[in-house]
Image (cartoon, rainbow over all chains, first blue to last red; front, side):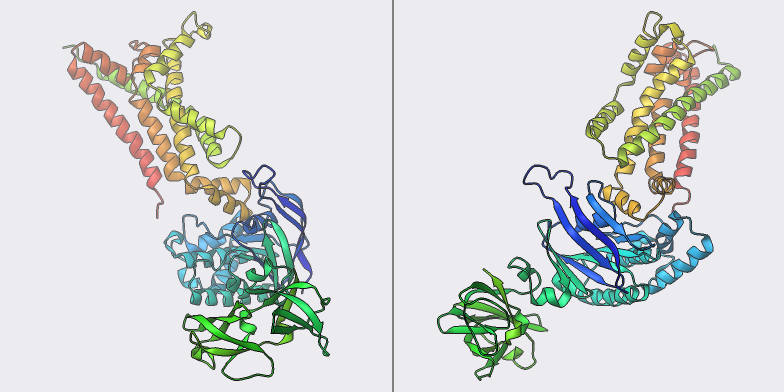
Length: 353
Length: 218
């Protein structure tokens, strides 16, 4: 189920035009894609995500190092803006099979199955260049799956799709990945889009892998302060470990009178960054809580109708928190409100400073 | 009135067809592969090659005629071949006029697909021959436009073929040089007859290519 299907070792790519000592270079020591598993590659623009995908697909002529395939099927790639060739949707999906010399009868059967998988059967006879961007993306995915690939590389597959189209596509994709046990790498700059499918997360910064690991491990324990905001740990407060409490948790002081506990091993006296995910902070308007870390007051709020984001002044910093709108405390937050903040020690992450 | 005999008209028209078709065939055989390679490959000096081709597209035919004449002149470097004032010399001059048009316009047609097209087709794992077939299919409109432009360029050309062919009756007279000569002689009826033939020939040939270009377009 989870053997490495595609493995990169000591991969180095210096794209043409990026010369000189300051030029960008992609440099990845080791990265593996596993059967039936989705690796989301996250990173800011220009981090080298697309270059990495092209190198894994064998499309980077400048690439040095090894990309090893441990399975029989091809490596398929779906581009951010798929190009369609003149002709019908079915012909576009059939293209790689035609290119590989697959007999007509088998081609027809596999194309029909791939069209069906991505809800394209009604569009089979349509001209491909008359499709919307979202439909073209689905055609490109069908064109990839029709090859029965061992590995699938997706470049920003949810880009330019509205939230509902993203949901629909991720459900179809997840189903297709499960059914075919394909190993997937998905590149995106958007954490939310990455989390729609990711089993594992790799963070690429400036051409280097800053962290690779299981989804929850990366989300809860980002390796450094550059990775933390990229994986949604947007609260980073400077503090110092001042004690260890009887339960073994580190006691961290953010400011005089402002302390919190972290379920983390850290030496007393160490300077740390305290990382807190917005969704882990519980607020309780005007009431106490056993896990309370102190009182703060709401500075400003922003709501998209589903989630409320609130910035809360606490310990000389502004803590960003997220709550569901209209439910529980979400609707009660207003600027000026005093709130009690509560946090579980296991939700507090310490990064050496 | 020294009316041209029908036989003579036909002979001139056939020669025109033979010279232009030969030049076009060679120009397409050399120019299309060059233009396609220029459009899909990246190599050092590509920019210089493209600007050279674009410059050559605007080359005045009279200058081409002069250069070919200098080369083929009896005392010129290729004088020993004895090609001056032969249909072969005319084919060479027309080839030099048509080739940049075929290369330049087919390069533009292939280049219009963009690097992303070539990358994505490569990612589909198509074999070399099949991806070339796909490329020709995708750029058919532009490639045939290149051929049509080259054909128009050489069918209507008069200066170069006059200089290297010499407009010799029964040997190197073609429709355009005939029209020029009869007009200068004041034999407008003959000039008009040849003009009508030239127009008809142009219409039939470009019409055929256009039909080919537009066929199967959905």
